[in-house]
Image (tube, rainbow, N blue to C red; front, side, top):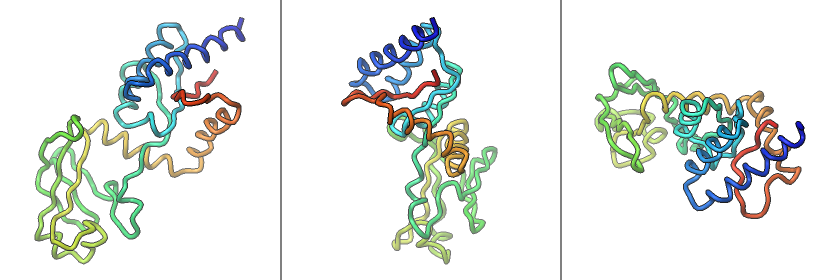
Length: 201
């Protein structure tokens, strides 16, 4: 009986992912969660690759389905520049709605905006402060004197991103995520069908 249920879980997940291949990956992931929950196979933790994980998808899986989404959140592009200050190097004051840079300069209050159709918070540091800063090239990456411009997500999503980026640099996180590579080596990904999960069966 247990083996029969296990086979059904794999087949159904593959079918659902294939049917949703033309949709946005977030929508495909939500369909998988919905289908597994309806069938009584709701996982506690769902391991996915970087193409299917974002602060939004982590938050939605947790709030809507009670599922912990586990996978690598995209790194801050600024963090790959050496030297450079990444967004996580700035202190966020959610009450004052400001950021403070590594050198102690505090921004004016951020302004709500949209990014790719999603709510974002636009933080622009004063031009004068950035032009006079000795670390200007490390931070802004430009020579025209513009202040550092940072976009934040709403607090729940921003905190998810910060937490996951920190966790995925640890050896323990890499050990846990290695389960995906192990399952892939057993042929659980087929052709062009993007199965978005390795579920704990």
